[in-house]
Length: 347
Image 1: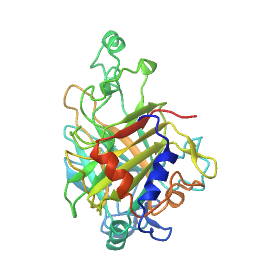
Image 2: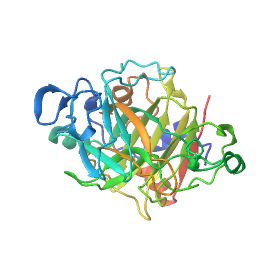
Image 3: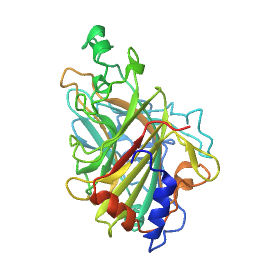
Image 4: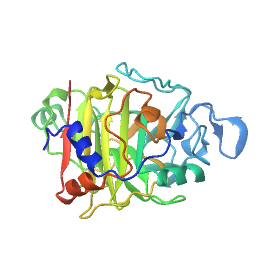
């Protein structure tokens, strides 16, 4: 099944389509463009302000970043901002600053809630597109002196890298820490069971799907060169919203009608014994503590888009799949047999 094409999947999906999608629109955006201090309108947040004191600066979000676990002492706003990778050929332009999420002696989890309008529109759309810029940072286990070089060379695995990091799909309202999962790298040691000799002595960003500390849900990772990445995610509800299908591309490149290359790709039904529903309330971030003799999780993120179409979310032309409102037929079949697909590189 690993070689099954997106076009084949799209054709089967079209057979089960029964409803349309909403008009093309950006439902939420956060680019850290001159954010203000929480509770102090008109006063800009200085470089280095802890994230829990930074208010939403874009559209579709409300309030400010809320701590849901641990503390935010090392998770801050940075005025410098990120840039789209060199392979990006879209119309989006990175503006303003960015967020830095970093653990310490405890896990550092925060969330930025959708406003009521965005939440309603997201909940009423079967196919949601998300994109953001991100980069894992911080030292590896070896660089931190925790694991000697000889051991690393003999047993070089991506999970020798620091603790968990990534974006979270907040599955409950308010300040809850409940999340449907993580788009990033989990905290478990050698969870992927793969050896990566190409990164011995260096570091690799690894993007994956996974429920927090739970590999029973779909897991698939992609490793590639270090640097800022453009992560693109499609969230599709099927079976009347009872199930959730995720597809992720990292640094996708289009030819005007389709995605033709990427640095990472994963797709699969989100299940935990049974298909799982996503009621998405906000964009979360997480970075793990220094437990387990491993460096803390640390990553930067920026330019968060949530939209009804691939083009609006990514700024890229074309579309990788048709966008019917219901994916019940093919996704229901694939979820029933527990199938997921993974490609590390194309092109």
